[in-house]
Length: 122
Image 1 (cartoon, rainbow, N blue to C red):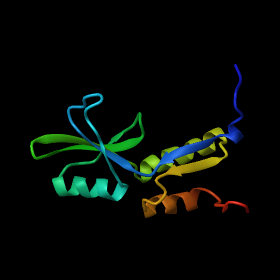
Image 2 (cartoon, helix red, strand yellow):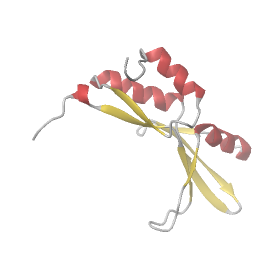
Image 3 (spheres, rainbow, N blue to C red):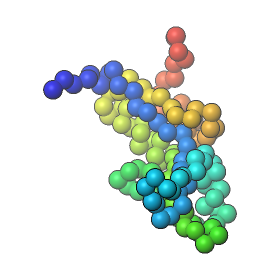
Protein backbone atom coordinates (compact mmCIF):
# COMPACT_ATOMS: atom_id res chain seq x y z
CA UNK A 1 0.00 0.00 0.00
CA UNK A 2 1.20 3.52 -0.79
CA UNK A 3 0.70 6.34 1.69
CA UNK A 4 0.36 10.01 0.82
CA UNK A 5 2.53 12.25 3.01
CA UNK A 6 0.32 14.37 5.29
CA UNK A 7 2.06 17.57 4.18
CA UNK A 8 0.54 16.96 0.73
CA UNK A 9 -3.02 16.72 2.04
CA UNK A 10 -5.48 19.59 2.47
CA UNK A 11 -8.68 19.15 4.45
CA UNK A 12 -11.92 19.93 2.63
CA UNK A 13 -14.17 22.06 4.81
CA UNK A 14 -17.89 22.56 4.13
CA UNK A 15 -19.21 26.09 4.55
CA UNK A 16 -22.91 25.19 4.29
CA UNK A 17 -25.58 23.00 5.77
CA UNK A 18 -28.41 20.73 4.66
CA UNK A 19 -32.08 20.78 5.61
CA UNK A 20 -33.54 17.29 5.04
CA UNK A 21 -37.26 16.49 5.05
CA UNK A 22 -37.90 13.21 6.89
CA UNK A 23 -38.26 10.32 6.46
CA UNK A 24 -35.32 9.99 4.12
CA UNK A 25 -36.02 7.92 1.01
CA UNK A 26 -33.02 7.15 -1.19
CA UNK A 27 -33.43 8.68 -4.64
CA UNK A 28 -36.61 10.50 -3.59
CA UNK A 29 -35.83 12.82 -0.68
CA UNK A 30 -33.82 15.92 -1.53
CA UNK A 31 -32.09 18.18 0.96
CA UNK A 32 -32.13 21.93 0.64
CA UNK A 33 -28.69 23.54 0.87
CA UNK A 34 -28.59 26.36 3.42
CA UNK A 35 -25.90 28.59 4.87
CA UNK A 36 -24.79 28.36 8.50
CA UNK A 37 -26.56 31.54 9.62
CA UNK A 38 -29.77 30.38 7.95
CA UNK A 39 -29.56 27.11 9.90
CA UNK A 40 -29.30 28.99 13.19
CA UNK A 41 -32.21 31.24 12.20
CA UNK A 42 -34.39 28.20 11.38
CA UNK A 43 -33.70 26.79 14.86
CA UNK A 44 -34.62 30.13 16.44
CA UNK A 45 -37.76 30.51 14.32
CA UNK A 46 -38.98 27.04 15.30
CA UNK A 47 -37.92 27.28 18.94
CA UNK A 48 -35.73 24.19 18.89
CA UNK A 49 -32.43 23.53 20.62
CA UNK A 50 -29.32 22.96 18.55
CA UNK A 51 -27.64 19.66 19.49
CA UNK A 52 -24.00 18.72 18.91
CA UNK A 53 -22.97 15.28 17.67
CA UNK A 54 -19.67 14.43 19.40
CA UNK A 55 -18.83 11.71 16.85
CA UNK A 56 -19.46 13.77 13.70
CA UNK A 57 -18.35 16.93 15.55
CA UNK A 58 -21.20 18.84 13.93
CA UNK A 59 -24.31 20.67 15.13
CA UNK A 60 -27.77 19.50 14.14
CA UNK A 61 -31.42 19.86 15.09
CA UNK A 62 -34.88 18.70 14.08
CA UNK A 63 -38.01 20.76 13.59
CA UNK A 64 -41.52 20.42 12.21
CA UNK A 65 -42.98 22.53 9.41
CA UNK A 66 -46.32 21.97 7.67
CA UNK A 67 -46.61 18.47 9.13
CA UNK A 68 -43.16 17.41 7.87
CA UNK A 69 -40.24 16.80 10.20
CA UNK A 70 -36.89 18.19 9.08
CA UNK A 71 -33.33 17.44 10.16
CA UNK A 72 -30.67 20.13 9.73
CA UNK A 73 -26.90 19.61 9.83
CA UNK A 74 -24.53 22.56 9.47
CA UNK A 75 -21.24 24.02 10.66
CA UNK A 76 -20.53 26.28 13.64
CA UNK A 77 -17.45 27.44 15.55
CA UNK A 78 -17.22 24.12 17.43
CA UNK A 79 -17.24 22.06 14.24
CA UNK A 80 -14.77 24.38 12.50
CA UNK A 81 -12.43 24.21 15.51
CA UNK A 82 -12.56 20.39 15.40
CA UNK A 83 -11.60 20.48 11.71
CA UNK A 84 -8.84 23.03 12.28
CA UNK A 85 -7.50 20.87 15.13
CA UNK A 86 -7.24 17.93 12.68
CA UNK A 87 -5.07 20.06 10.39
CA UNK A 88 -2.68 20.73 13.27
CA UNK A 89 -2.83 17.21 14.72
CA UNK A 90 -1.94 15.49 11.45
CA UNK A 91 0.33 18.21 10.04
CA UNK A 92 -1.82 18.74 6.96
CA UNK A 93 -0.85 21.40 4.44
CA UNK A 94 -4.04 23.41 5.02
CA UNK A 95 -7.69 23.57 4.07
CA UNK A 96 -9.94 24.28 1.14
CA UNK A 97 -13.55 25.43 1.43
CA UNK A 98 -16.72 24.32 -0.34
CA UNK A 99 -19.13 27.22 -0.85
CA UNK A 100 -16.63 29.91 0.00
CA UNK A 101 -19.13 32.67 -0.83
CA UNK A 102 -21.40 31.79 2.11
CA UNK A 103 -20.26 34.36 4.67
CA UNK A 104 -19.89 33.07 8.24
CA UNK A 105 -17.76 35.55 10.16
CA UNK A 106 -17.08 33.30 13.16
CA UNK A 107 -15.27 30.86 10.87
CA UNK A 108 -12.91 33.53 9.57
CA UNK A 109 -12.19 34.91 13.05
CA UNK A 110 -11.33 31.43 14.34
CA UNK A 111 -9.23 30.66 11.26
CA UNK A 112 -7.25 33.87 11.76
CA UNK A 113 -6.76 33.07 15.46
CA UNK A 114 -5.51 29.52 14.88
CA UNK A 115 -3.35 29.89 11.74
CA UNK A 116 -1.06 32.20 9.83
CA UNK A 117 -3.02 33.05 6.69
CA UNK A 118 -1.10 33.26 3.43
CA UNK A 119 -2.62 34.42 0.18
CA UNK A 120 -2.03 32.28 -2.88
CA UNK A 121 1.36 33.10 -4.40
CA UNK A 122 2.90 34.54 -1.21
